[in-house]
Length: 245
Image (cartoon, rainbow, N blue to C red; front, side, top):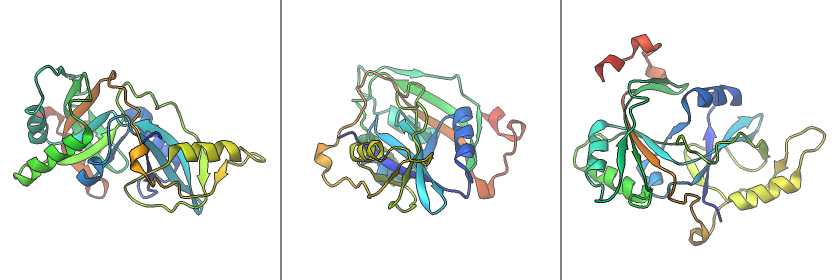
């Protein structure tokens, strides 16, 4: 079974699916995640994004986890200090200083490192490193999972209505195989979206595998001045602290 997670996009910051998709086209996708949840994830896991449409959720975008962003520089330095010999780590400065002005908040990209192999640092171990840094008094930032430049899944939405799944914050494991089978069986009727019943829970994690083959580079990224939207003061690139980077 392909490992997957269902993630609800709230209407508070994204009133329509299109508002989220437009932002994703401009900046890519990064979503806040707790260290507890990150420890259960792995590179290549599929994230299914859903948005409330009327009284029910509709799935509309998917991506594979290929990047962890939102880290403080101190946290990123701590992680890189644990890189084993033989791993290739390359600084990718193409987006350094870029302001990311999302519906839910703003931040400026600091340092991005590309790593040639995901196997040396599973997300469970990355979460443990970040937790150890936090326990040691290091501000680890606001960890986020996102798609990399090489995302094999970022190929457009599959619109399916989830009749029985409630809107919840965060991420929950999702039975992707069962969901796809139900969606294909439901089909489109009279121009309406496929509608499926069920919660699509994952009951046995032993049969779940990641979709990452290790051949695609992963990324870890630090940012500065993360500001949640309700407190946001950055309104334009000119107002950002990019020149401080």
